[in-house]
Amino acid sequence: MTPGPDNNAMTDSPNNWPVRAVDAGDAAAIARIYNHYIQTTVITFEEQTLSDAAMAQRIADVSALGLPWLVAEENGQLLGYAYATRWKPRTAYRYSVEITVYMAPGSAGKGLGTALYAELFRRLRALGVHAAVGGIALPNEASIALHEKVGMKKIGEFEQIGFKQGRWLNVGYWQIVFDDNAEQTAAAEQR
Image (tube, rainbow, N blue to C red; front, side, top):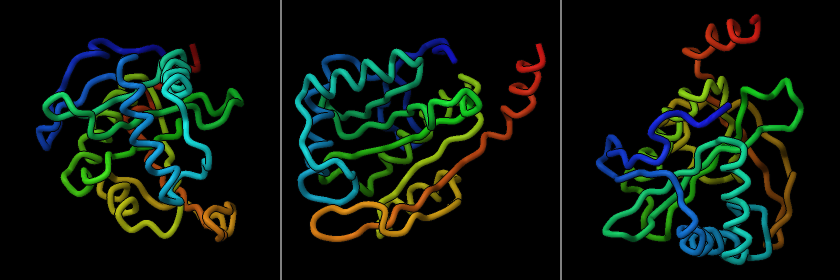
């Protein structure tokens, strides 16, 4: 998969949130958002906060794969981000990705997650991605609602798979299959 045209262009989402490709200068703001979730929630299973440099490396790693990492902002303030990475390293998974979205504290419920996922899905389709999967630490009604709003369906749940903040946690998985890419992918593979 290679980046499509206008990968860095700013787009207005259906909710008029400006969404654009990440740049190196966003690492500190993204680290602040993510570290909030590491420290105060079970939404991520990481338990140690990340430095700005570590986040910059993660962004570089996703970019090196040719996959999108997007941010949404208002008045120059980064309010959320979403990205895709490989689902698994085995080659048969090459058309599948894992996706994630995080919003700055106080930014949820404004359509930001929907806007980020809409643009992420548009770019993933353009790259020929066939399936996207998102994991949700349960319970998390807001995240479930977002994933189902954008067309994802629950496909499974691991019970007591993680341990954080003194309790065992389940993780559910939601998936969307971009059917419009099925014939294109099959044709490309037969060449």
